[in-house]
Amino acid sequence: MRPEIKLVAVDDTPATVQLLAEALAQSGLTVLTSTDPEEGMDLIFREHPQIVLLDLVMPKLSGLEMLLRIVEFDPAIDVILMTPHYTTETAVEAIQKGACDYLNKPVSIPALRERVEKLLALARLREKGMELDRELMETSRFEGMIGRSPLMWELFARIRRVAPHYRSALITGPAGTGKDLVAKALHNQSPAAANGRFVTCNCSALVETLFESELFGYVKGAFTGANSDKMGLFEFAHGGTLFLDEIGDMPLLTQTKLLRVLQNQEVTRVGSVTARKVDVRVVASTSRDVPALISEKKFREDLYYRLAMVELRTPTLADRKEDLPLLEKFFLDRFSQQFDKEIKGLTRRAQIALARHSWPGNVRELENTLEHACMMTMNDVIDVVDLPADKRHGEERKFVAVGESGVDSTFSFEDHERELLVDALKRAAGNQSEAARILSISRDRMRYKMAKHSLR
Image 1 (cartoon, rainbow, N blue to C red):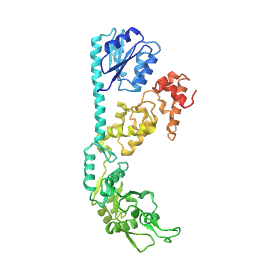
Image 2: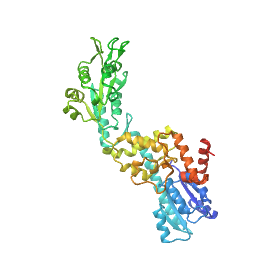
Image 3: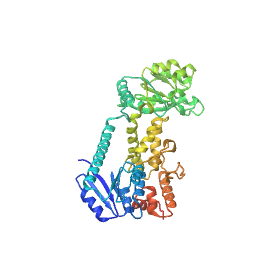
Image 4: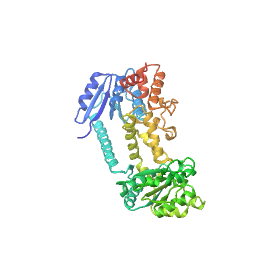
């Protein structure tokens, strides 16, 4: 069953909206009408239609003013303007401001039906594309990672091939590319996943004096404060996998002892003379240039070759831009659930802005960007104004956006929402309808949010 398409017609003449509703009625299309432009805006914000028909000249709010509001709300909505006073100048102005067509009144019903049919076909193609994207998302998941690019398919294939057999592996790649997910995937695809743990040691977070005791453990009395025996991470990970994150920060002395553990599969606790057998798969990762560290005598060459028997490299986001739409959808779905907000996607210009960015922070930067956008937006689509300033690339709105009112980014989502409401009400001098239009939400939604935050 194909999804229902919505069309909203707004004209201050009741006979016209009735004629439009009857003329355009068909299966698969819901036609909604209004004779009041302000109520029509509420209807558009609430129903989020794919197509809108507007009379150009109306009291309170003109068709061009409504067009600007609609384009700011969602540029993907197709808007047709109608007027009995057709001029080339106003037609050009309407198209420049975002209208998809400009028709002379009285409107030719056959011509209008033909135009609407074309827009319906485009809307159904977009819906079909979204459905295909959802199916593609399911087929592009692998152990918590998302990707359909050749680089990611090759990475997934290598993980599947080596996971059953490796004893040690090295994952390299820039920060934010998901090396921890690759390590987890290696564990999950290996025999160790059946009964063994996945244990993580963040090497960059440990001070040098704690490395040995954390990795290998210690016995009572080994040093001041050692009041009892303590198991190290190698023993704790027995039968499973130990992930050494950012191994490039590990001291040379600890590297020497780590090499011995990898070779002999046994550890000696600090202060003990007895070796203990361990059965552990070791996965190490680093975002640093290991050959450069070796040349600087900061990393043992023999340890590198021991680990690099299996070496996997995670690609940068810039090298797999074709995965960007899938990653965007993945994170939007996650944050919609986290913030309890129905977020359907990104506007076209927001997609363009994100596509133009170079993503030096890779997937982690994209995740943080979309978390910020989902927190800031008051609508069910993410627009350019919801993105952090460095992601907009000149695509900002031409008016001063309420989302840029200087709200402290450390506030919670609830604090952000309240500040946006207060700012919009101030700018609208307390007029709730005007504040709702500034925020591109319906008046009912405005009143609900005011009540939620105890605003009067």
